[in-house]
View 1 (cartoon, rainbow, N blue to C red):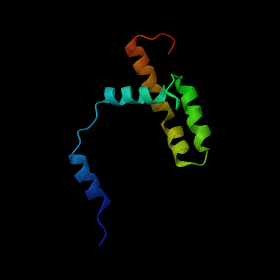
View 2: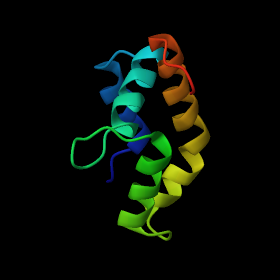
View 3: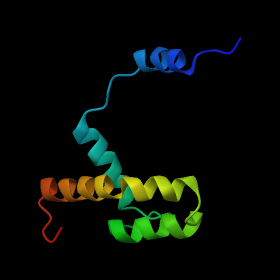
View 4: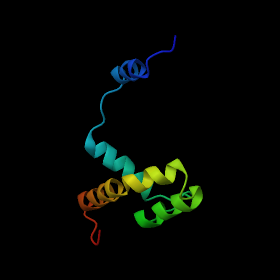
Length: 87
């Protein structure tokens, strides 16, 4: 008999508190403004790098495409919170 995936999710989810939105934005900002060489990049360059690395048919590229508006909004929110201009 196979285990119910939802039951696993509920069990694992009980062990972890839900992330605060500002924490998620900060982590997204860090990930999406740092290139694979650990140098700072703008979010558009980072997104393009991910797409070029995986190709358009890969699940990662497809997920990034769907998430792009949220990713860009998170980066801009952190820029604004940090007082950066032009973003």
